[in-house]
Image 1 (tube, rainbow, N blue to C red):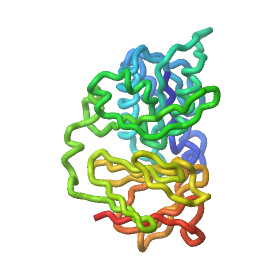
Image 2 (image 1 turned 90 degrees about the vertical axis):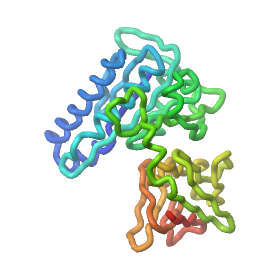
Image 3 (image 1 turned 180 degrees about the horizontal axis):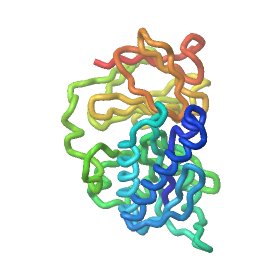
Image 4 (image 1 turned 120 degrees about the vertical axis):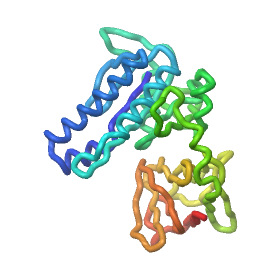
Length: 287
């Protein structure tokens, strides 16, 4: 079961008006529907700027999700607004009635898409384990969340996709080559962490994780944000309720809520409030 929704649609309606925005969203939905059908899936229904689709296998859902991301990423901005896509999917049994789909699998998939940010594909570790070797090679584990009705937490995984014509393999081996020498240094109190490998990631927040940096700030969420390497870039992905406040030295502060930001040069990350009022700040250096 897969959910995919268009990111940036609210801003587009505000800036371009209903007619232009509706036309742009419909174009995205057509591309998403096409990717679904080519992969052997079925669009169950559309809800505004979101589609709900059913696939026979995890590999089929993964291939369709990658194709959707590629297709939407190729679209030109509309009224200066660049649209993106958030995708979440989970494999399991469903109940079908009158063309609609119900059940625990649907509920989990709907929560996964809520965890995704623009340009991201999120699945569960349970689904990841069912993928074929090619698709599984381009996934990485993130963190776990509690889902209502589930007795245990659900571990999230991300499908890494990149620009290439053949999306059946998700990502090119060229990903590993570019910018191999670039390093991100994070400094918090007397601790320093480095990100070198591609892909690599670190989670920042109040909760201790295997690949994380614990931030002792009551304004920070348990799993506040993730910083991941994408080729020669380091991208901060906010997962929090109160937002991440990022300042690049010499530039105005930027607030992120469930959004991404490319870190560069030297700067600071504050949690849940602007840096000027923050008691805890993580400093970063892109070397």
